[in-house]
Image 1 (tube, rainbow, N blue to C red):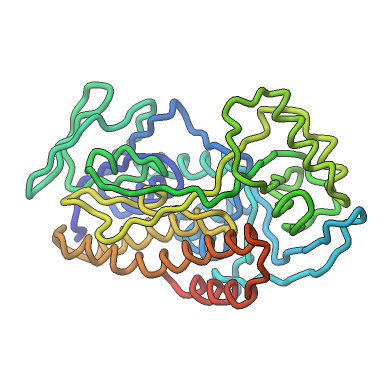
Image 2: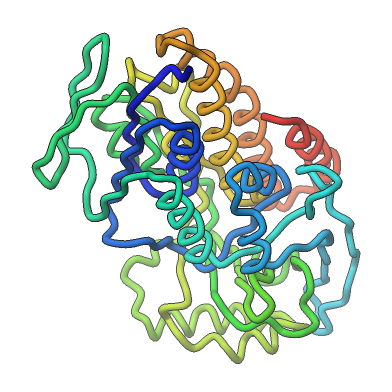
Length: 376
């Protein structure tokens, strides 16, 4: 018997969709609200490490994702010289287990569609263009008023509404989101035939210039610079800036450069970080994913940690008969040390790059690989 019969999930991103699917599969009545008007996702591509693939398998969407995405086991490092000389070809650790690829690249909107389609099949009742206006709690439940004027009552509310979480604000949970000091351009583009795994160049005009295949025909390329205010840049300027940066790199970048023409295929964000201290809940409302923690993508663990949040929370909810403070505190206690180590390691990598320091990157990455190889 589950500790809950009815749950509201706020946010249809990776953490929210995964939580909703796992609960609905177990027979829990789940409502999901998403403030966007349809299934979408900001960005061009996403890298999902092995521990993320492990949860996607639990969600019964891994096969579909592998068909649409692009799995690989290697990382190619190139030099920032005109020939883009290959410095090393590294075999990546299979943190999801020996039967799963080390990582997979995927077009973000495709991942969003796969997850929300699976949620619908599981019986999750989803409403778009809707979020929570306010909520009131008592010892037995949460009364919610939505922005469309409707109301509902739930045993539990899960705030999975991202970095700028409105749920967090409703709960008056203070959390400072800090810029790490880097900004990243991401571009969705055709995949050159020679690109069969993630590749990265460290140095040159950018801290990192790289790309990851997202399907047989596509990839997302990225260029990391000092964080800048790019909010007023025009579409023409956006294309010009990215082409200028990409044009300073050789190898496959030359072919990628030719495809950088559409401003709609380009987005720019800052590397940011925050981590909520315990507890991650207030009464019967709990925060997961970016609402509780976010880190720069230097270890590509953002989506993986969000998926792990969902899996652990639902495991605890389904293994108990009663929802109480002890259960939700146990969720934070199980997740916080692991997430803290990932966030701190991700930020440390960025700081070394910003300072042009030769930190012990292999040791750091090995430690995180070992950590994420164990189940959350």
